[in-house]
Each structure stands twice: as C-alpha cells, then as structure tokens.
Image 1 (tube, rainbow, N blue to C red):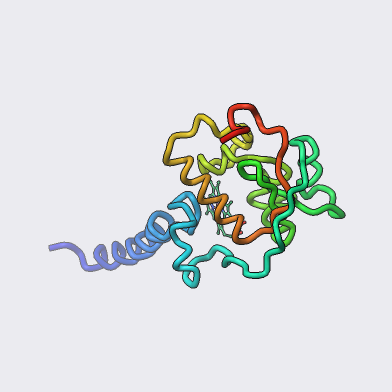
Image 2 (cartoon, rainbow, N blue to C red):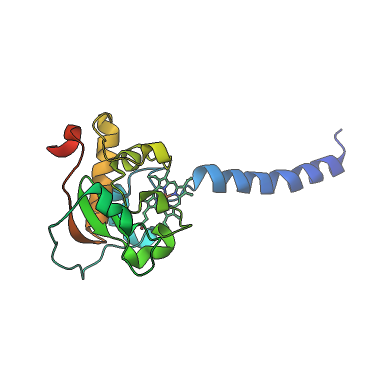
Length: 169
Ligand code: HEM
C-alpha cells in the first residue's frame, strides 16, 4: 500500500508543474513563434496583438536608402521610428515601447529586416533585407507580417536600394 502522504505531496507538486507546462508550451502567444498573425485576425477580440486600425493615413511614397532608414531606429527621441518590410517603410512610432531602445522588437527598427520576420528570428544576422533564400513557408510568414503592418501602421515611403536579389520581387 502506498503511503497517502506520498500521494498528497505528489499531487501538490504535479498540479503546479502541469500548470506551468500548459502555460509555457501550450498557451503560446499570437506570435510567429506559434503561427503567422494574419491567420488569427478574424479572432481579433481574443488576440493579444493590437487590433487593425481604421484611421490610417493615405500611403506616402517617399524614397529612403537603407542608410537613411538607420536614423529612424528610435535612438533619437525627436525622430519617428520606422520599420521596413519588403521595401515598404512603416511608421511604428506609436509603439515606441516595442520598437524603441530596449523594446522587444528594437532589432527591426531603422531597418528592412524582412529576412528575420520571415524566419521568425530576432538574431541580428537575420535582420537584413535579402529574404530571397527563404523557403515558401517563410515567404508566407513574411507576407503575413507585411499584411499585419499594413493594417496597423502608416506607410511613409519605400526603400530604394534593396539588394538586387529582392529589388524586383
Ligand atoms: C517565445 C517567444 C516570443 C514571445 C513570448 C512573443 C510575444 C509577443 C507578444 C506578447 C506580442 C504582442 C505584444 C505587443 O504588441 O508588443 C508580440 C508581437 C510581435 N512579435 Fe513576438 N514573441 C516571441 C517571439 C517572436 C519572434 C521570434 C519574432 C520574430 C519575428 C516576433 C515578432 C513579433 C512582432 C513583429 C510583433 C508585432 C508587434 C507589433 O504590434 O507591431 N516575436 N510578440
């Protein structure tokens, strides 16, 4: 016969452990870590992602070189913060806590980091514009991010010196 104390302690340990496993492994955030955000948009009320906006300004077509874009990485508080995806430059200033210095996604600020968005990678070496080598599935993730940003951030311009491999894609 097993000592009832052992069962009791076992249960006391197992329940919090099961809760933690559920939180960490099952209940992933609505991030590309789990699945591309566009597929969840119908579910906006239950999503932790910010909802799409209805007050976006008409898109602008100002030209930016990749070097010029660097000035808009949030390090100068007097300037807006820009993120470019597939050459489209988005103004993400109203999410300064996310994209500004120390923010979770500051790696994308002042850059076209399309490759990293497609790969769901926050590595600095992936934060580059040349996404040409990505497999189909990651191209889709990248396109979904482009759609996500298009519905939430004003377009302020386009990158004019993308690497040749992606310039005409
Ligand atoms: C387990 C790891 C991760 C967790 C816990 C996580 C968590 C989150 C959360 C809570 C949000 C919504 C909050 C907000 O709007 O600031 C978010 C948004 C986002 N995540 Fe993640 N994330 C993870 C990994 C990644 C990775 C690897 C990428 C790389 C592409 C990524 C890219 C993004 C982007 C671009 C947004 C949209 C931010 C916006 O609203 O503009 N995340 N993530």
